[in-house]
Length: 570
Image 1 (spheres, rainbow, N blue to C red):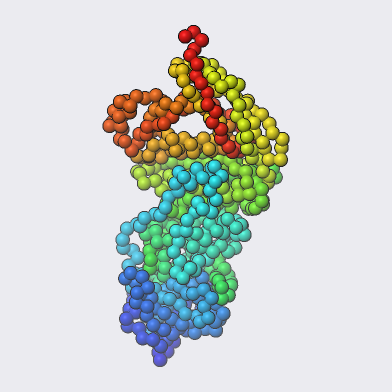
Image 2: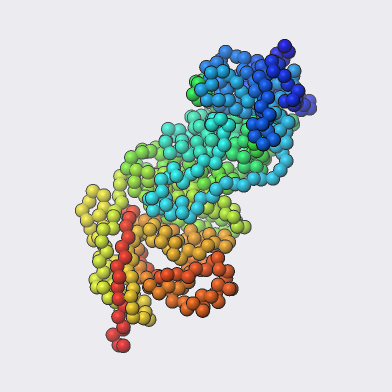
């Protein structure tokens, strides 16, 4: 049996042993950071090699010969801890098993990790859709359902995530981070300065500024200004630009179910530039600036403005904007129970344009709903498949209260069931607010001059339902980034009481606008010039719309048939 050898902190030149050269029973060491920043050298024994853990991938199995692991197995945060045999690097601890009775770890061979610098970026994952935005705005989509899980953690393990300055006990926020493969735990700031060495804790910054969210792991090897870590992917994003920071272990929470390291995070020292199946690669030097996100929260007890930076990756932007918005809303007020929230979102683009959106929700999940809408809207543009300007600033303003304020539209009664061109039509709209008697709101719709005699429909609806209806009936497929902006422009808050007149004779819709009454021959001609994918023939066409902004969200829609009579002079 080989003697246990101490691992060098930094070899003059990196060298490693291939898995095929290992034999079961060989002894070596694993180095990892432990409680209080202690560098722990753990005796290990080679169990064997799994030569097909994934396509063209293998893993070395080692047993941790230290009694402190008998009650926990591999601890989350050890990912990347270097394993040595005969003083030569084997690779990085990458995975273990939940509820393991024996402390066996899977080790990613360093030969695979050393190739991390090559290759290009990989697909950025699913981008939030218009259907997701409409479902959140209309109150039909559960906010949890808006966020699929893109992470692939070996054996289902989550990375420890240090969260400092924001709550870690909010259920929606925890679930959101778990979809990124992260387990939230309270943390602090501060760690030893300088570059980490092999075996030291390292962190990938996702949110920084007034608060901090960082995924934790361990450095496997360092060669000058280049560092290899984790031994497994974060999200397999390929080429990335994520801040890398030194971290320090404060304590280790052991258990069969879910052991993990509690750690603090220091100042960034460089950038993670690769996130691939074999691990992550960092380079010391400049640090990414991140996407600025400001969240202004107003409630009866006061106002607080939060300033963050979030990692700029198309897959991460929607998650992180949602997370920091929701966390800011729950930081000093109730995270559950009845609530109302009015959202104002402004997204600044690099070409000088600004996208302005508003939404309002009143429900037990109102905070998660408006936060998810903000994140989904940002993700919809950040992940655009078309050439597009970058988002340079995200500004979120939310007014919230711990009470329900929504109303149901229960009736819409026009002053008469016929109209003449050029007239004004009063409409009595009856609404019932939460725990209040019914009330009546009168709105007036202007009937366009020049309408031909015939059928006409009056539509009364909340703004969110109306926007979704227009998306379905008028919204042509986006052929470029401007088309996406036109699609977003159709969204409006449910607090708008919309009354519209709609002709049953359709027209065409293109570039986000409808043209009623266009003859079929004109439609065909336009289709040739504009491209059929961006032009839609309508079964009906809106000819007049009036909006009445209210202080509370609405739900419901009514359609009332009318008749257009000839002008009195005809």
